Length: 114
Length: 113
Image (tube, rainbow over all chains, first blue to last red; front, top):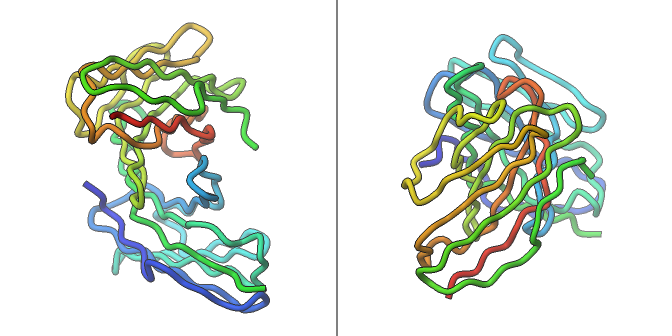
């Protein structure tokens, strides 16, 4: 079963605009990670935010985490055509031995119109 | 591009057959995880190997099995293939387990007819 749910399922914006995607999850987490996937290929790690962090930046990416609401958001600023992809949030609930694996949502499909 | 490679790229098998998928982890990584991604869905955790032993398992039946070798490369074996096993199979390696980012390979697309 999938813990996370991304919202919206699909998003289409003009190049240069900002894109915001949200993720909700159900159980307590160790960290939350965002990944990008192009056309059914492998996933690329974008950013990891730990449960004791509230906000993190990486280049044009900004991630927030609200553990009280069990939610996270990913903001991509000044979008580019190359940002067109599916974006997934993934939660890690275990550290070290007895790993539970990353739990992914269904993803947000982002389309950047040139 | 990550240093994780998978083979083959695509595979077509018949229901009831067996399949082996392979993964070479990124240099220095001792943990490998396998995921199944059905069309339009997010990846689902199958299992993880750490230093050649299964370290955790998702909700998959025993006909999904794996191995990790001393060089930390890994295999995923699926017996008695079913039509619903058609999916993209992804492996991911990391050096420190799930507290750190996972490096994914490009995946193997399995079609069961």
